[in-house]
Structure formats: structure tokens, C-alpha cells
Image (cartoon, rainbow, N blue to C red; front, side, top):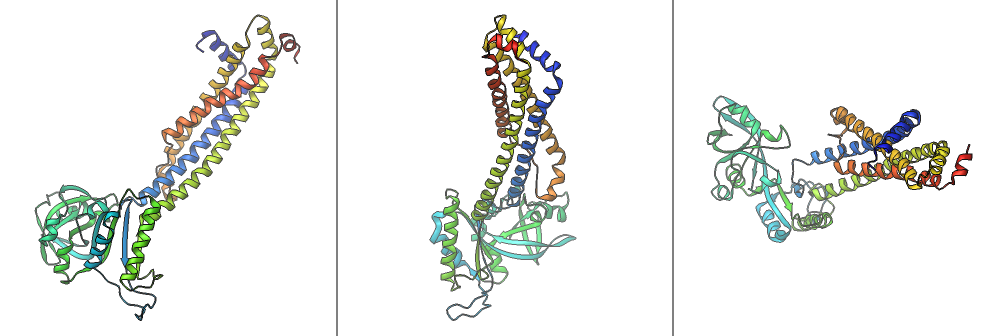
Length: 409
């Protein structure tokens, strides 16, 4: 393997037959280039799907209500369905072992003012678990806690960009802001992967909102995080059962999606997973086809090259060369050409993906790239294919008797 004379012969052979060496390498390089681009694009699609759900926990579920669209049990169409604290408590009591996080939500739009700066912002009244359901990142201070709920405290957690709007570079923590005419203490500053809209929101305790803005126990929405130990199918079954139970409890027609629905991230994750699995299979099939075509191409070229060198092999055998040495030299040459060409194909593919990556975001393809596992697998495939492409014809030629080899045309 590390015989200097053999390597010298190999490079002399490559230099002597530049055209066939280039052709051999081109078939492999093109196959790997196409393979890399295909997998990179699929990877970019996968990244886009992940970013689309980045703002919420992957195990999130959302119970939403509106107006009935179907009559049921003597109740008319168009009846406004209202979630209340008792519905939130029912879910907690009935399915507690299947729930990791839970929070009620009340949506408000209020003017928030600090000194001379004021603007209208989305304010959400929530429970402490909401931090994990929304994947909220606390940059300063803290999030809401159970004590805030018990005492119905007038405290507020504001987004990073909301803080910049009202305070600029000045500190906001422990300052008081005017929210719809009432004074709230800023206890935390948060950031969110969801972007600008999410970072211009504010959170207040649910009980505070119910006391101050309606003096009732109404809830706009219920957000849950199902137990992460549940499989996707089990989580989907849980969501469907909870939806059926809530419909029955609230006298809603079983098929009335307008009145009550449960958006389950498990369904979305399963759908995306199935779609990406099928897409990867298609790309793997097409990519494998290009690799096979490359292997066949270099095999055919190696057969032709070995046929040209049959007399050379005959002379070598007549001078005492062993078949194994002839096979080893051909295999090394084949592996060398295949590996170099494959590396060039991979390098060119990753370079192209890096150059065009930003321009593909308009097509829902973000940060297209090839994982190290794919690169290692493709490299191993190259080495094995190079061995096969060189070994089979070389073995046949090395077994020819010297006299027959010398007579070959």
C-alpha cells in the first residue's frame, strides 16, 4: 500500500492516460455533486419546517373556541362558546398524567406607556407554564410565578423590542409602565425565536386580567404541553379524546370544528416527519442511481484500460510479478481516482449550496447543507465503489496466462 515505486507507477499511468483518468473522475464527481445538492436541498426544506414551528414547544396543544356552526341538543347555530376556569381545571384533573405544561390564555390589546413614549401592543394574560409552551427566553429579571397569580399582582413581562420602543437604552427592570390606565411593575425582559412580532408582546398574570378586565372567569384559549414520553400516535389519540370529551361537556356537535378545535403539534410533526421521510427516500433513490451510474461508468473505463494493458500485465507476470501485485496496483489507481473525484464533487456541492443558500429562502429552503453523516457515508461508498470498479476487471486480467496476455490485441 505504501510502496513508493508502485505509487510512482500509478501516477505515471494516470499522467500517460490523462483523458481516460479525467473521464473516470468526471463520472464520479458529477454523481457525488448531484447527490450532495439533492440532499442539501432536502436538508434546507427540513430546516424550514423546523423554523416554522420554532416559536412553540414541539409538544404543544391549543384548545380554541368560537361560534357553533351546527345546532345540537336544541341549541341554536351561532351560539358563542366560552371557555372558563372550570374547563381549564377539568382538563387538569382529567388528564393531569398526560400533561407536562398547561396555561390558560386571555388576549388583549392595550396601550402601554412610559413617560412620553406610548404605543399599542398585544398583551397576553397567562399562567407561569406559558414560558415553556412559547419557548420564551428570559434575558433580564424573571417570568410570572404562582405567587403573582395568587395575589393577582400587577406585574408585567415585556418583550425585548417593546422594551427598546419605550425605554431605548435605559434599564426597564423594576420600572413602572402604564397599561390601559393602570400601573404595572416590569419584572422581566424576554426574547423569542419567533421574531419581531413576538418580541413586541407583553405577559401579565391570568388572574389579574380576569379581575381587572371583566371581573369574570373567562378564558380565550387553553394551551397545553403533552407528556413528551408519549409517542406521536399516543399524543394524537390523547388530543382527539380530549376534544371529544370537551365537545360532550360543552354541548357542542361532535363534528362542529368552528365551535371547538384542538390544534395538536403532534399531528403536524407526524405529517412533516412522514413527508420528509418520503422525500428523503426519493432523494436517496435518485442519488443512489447517480452513484450507481458513476460506479458503472468508472468500471467500464477501467475494463477498457485493463484491456489496453493486458500485454503489460503479461510481461509483468513473465518477469515474476504475482497476480496480487497487479490487482493491488490497479485497485489503488481506481480508488485514488474515485476518492479524489468524489472529494472534488463533495467540495463543489457544498460550495454551491453555501453560495446559493440565501437565495433559496424564497422557495422555502433554508440553510441547505449536507450533514457529516452523509459525507462520511458518501466517502465510504466512493472507496468501496473504487475497490469494486478496479478489483473485478483487474482480477480477471491478472489470472490470464502470460503467453495469452502477450498475444492479446
